Length: 201
Length: 274
Image 1 (cartoon, helix red, strand yellow):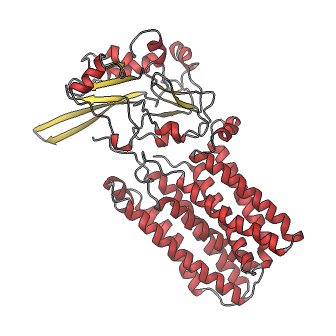
Image 2 (cartoon, helix red, strand yellow):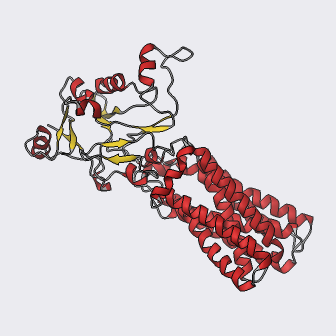
Image 3 (cartoon, one colour):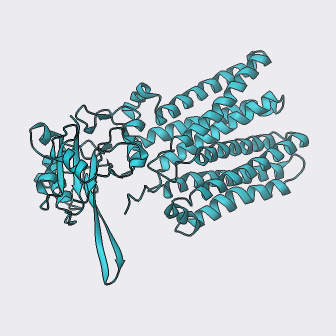
């Protein structure tokens, strides 16, 4: 079992609903994004277009973040999900520096989205899920996945640009899409073997 | 990315401490500069301690720092082990300075010299990360190593000038300092040149937002001024010699500090194909 994700760049419209859904579901504090969409404008007027590239933790099989972690707080689980044991994280931020995808954030403190005001009831309910002074990143919504659900970004994507499943199962949709569309991994030359594939379906 | 000042101070002070210990050990092995053996060792120890404390301040959870012992093979683990080992050997050397036979002391000095060089190099090698193209070059740890040696030589020079060492010894150290500065200029030059591979990063130093820091603080203050001071320094011992040595040391410290801070400013990640 190795969980992975396929992102169809032909389908992504850059709406950032994945970004917002992730923030809502995981209650991440200001400045912390577990997924985001990079946008680039190409061409010259009037022949211009936007290119969108959704980014999240690539759940690499050979993760740089895990290699440099001095305490072993970052681990690769048997199902392929890369996790952070917040109780073992010393907050050195080396994983944040080492991740080639910029997929990690450092939670310096959990503050309100509304400066000068008390945390809202929602923020208070979510703040307990974070330890200040530790690294944070996407965990493929591990709790949801363990309960048999899909990651919230996958469920939310209106264009069905994100597909989640078991890369070790050749009959899974993700495996078929990777094979059929020659799925590409970002910065594959680094040898970290990401579990997120990009296709132009 | 943002400058991590606690890490800048950690690398600067461990470099200063390792370089000073290396200088004391080298002069001991050469049978010279006995007068600075004790103050030099203390200077090195204090610098290493400040460096160690700075690294603790970098951690958000220092209470869990001992977990690093379980993974000494990681970049940070190697730094931790070498810093502790160098400190212990330095303490041993300081203990032996008064009591032990010269051969024993010099053996420890030789080990200390090797450990100091390894520490200074390893502190730089920690940042050789494939995810940071501007750091993933052999010239980065080499810059840290040479910078540490230069800091050590100038610290030794200050102590010798303060102790009114003889003109011959001061001249030898002056030549050593000049050689170190030339070597540092070459290594920094190679490092800056290596940044041109990812054009985005090269432009930061050469034409972007931080050339003032690079050309003014690293090159002019950190390299040119101490070089000029070494060339025009008084021949014999005296207060002028001490003043020149002090100013030169401050210059190389400013240059070393800026080199380390700039590393963070040029440390952008890959462009991810966009």
